[in-house]
Length: 277
Image (cartoon, rainbow, N blue to C red; front, side, top):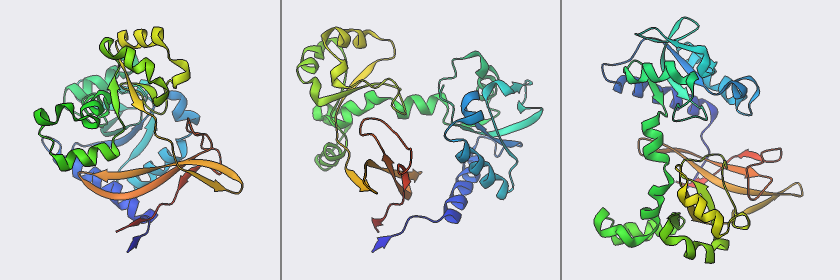
């Protein structure tokens, strides 16, 4: 049986249900206050996801939540609540590009989070533990299977789906330099293509510098994306699996006009995806 993509109403209801479940699971129960969609000031004004921010707020309002879009420097902390223009914030959808909150404008958010007075997703802990690309090394390579308790069946699945990944370190620079054409080089905590280096930009000297950077880099085997042709335009596509607490609730495809970077100019963008249920 071929499953259809989830319709808009179902996705809206699912998002609202996720928020309710996380609120209920928060220590001490749901916090009073509004939902804040957070991003840097430039993105809030005219970023490419601004329409999605508006849609997200519409979902929350439809389900009875006050909601707003703002940048971190618009928030404040009164010692008890995270505030947005004087209104208490209970739940933050953190689309910010500074997931570690190092900048000064995150002071209020840091204080509220440390005091346990706001729910934030993602927050520095979840970002550090779930987005660190060094975790892909033992998942993609069998060297630590016994210590990690990875079974033979699990290894077969991991090897089929997790690209070979190596943390760039002094001990493997020669090997990576010899095979550099097989890899792309990514920062451990990068996202949206930021900091990505292709093989042509990397040699011995640069690898040595990457190995010494505090933020660190990985070499990940290049996996070419499938190509579709739409109205005479080549599009490179990949698949996104949307899951919550172990349950897959939707699949979506992304189509880019470039094979090495995201370029969503039409006919690129999100595309409907079907799968066998």
